[in-house]
Length: 239
Image 1 (cartoon, rainbow, N blue to C red):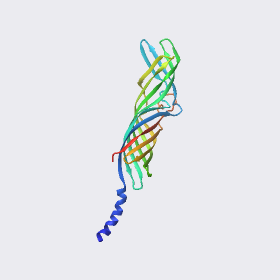
Image 2: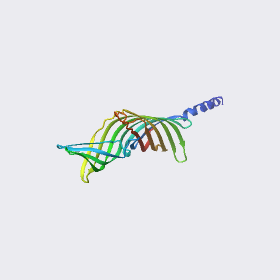
Image 3: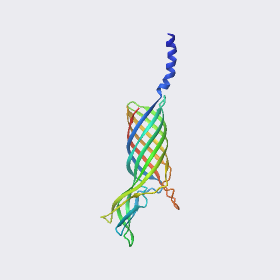
Image 4: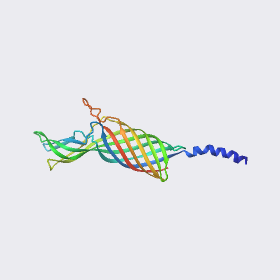
């Protein structure tokens, strides 16, 4: 009887500790990206030339305000507290595209440079390694549980590349493909994240709002473009 009386308080002390646990989560899905800011564009022009058998071209402003599709995936370590508080660290890889509609081709034929009506699309590709630290809460609902997180994110941005194609003057083809330079090495963002769980499987959505100007390196200019990223995917609780 005396042992039982001693064992009872020990169980009461251990219960809050047992209620806390760490989860390991893998996730993957669709990444939708565009640029915001006063100089992000929905429509753009392309400088394009065919001279002495050599074809070249580039988009004047490839930082598109139209959503382009890519891929995002990652892994998360998440601490769940006794009162369902959450502390999460997420590390992810993103292969993203923004999209710009091309409406004019500035065509150079070796003698003159003239604007031509055009159709087509330019995609600006970037790759990101993103680290996210989130605080939040798990809401236990009748049919599922919902994790809501918010916090800072830092992304290492690399692999800027432009790819575009279309026609001008109705039937003449144009195309661009090449690396684009950028002084942006890291992007500071604010991220909101939500995951609805049914047992071990979850549906996840997150949004990242960038604060680093991707054209801040231009000399004599004041162009402003900032990353905007929406992710939609599935998650699996590994542990």
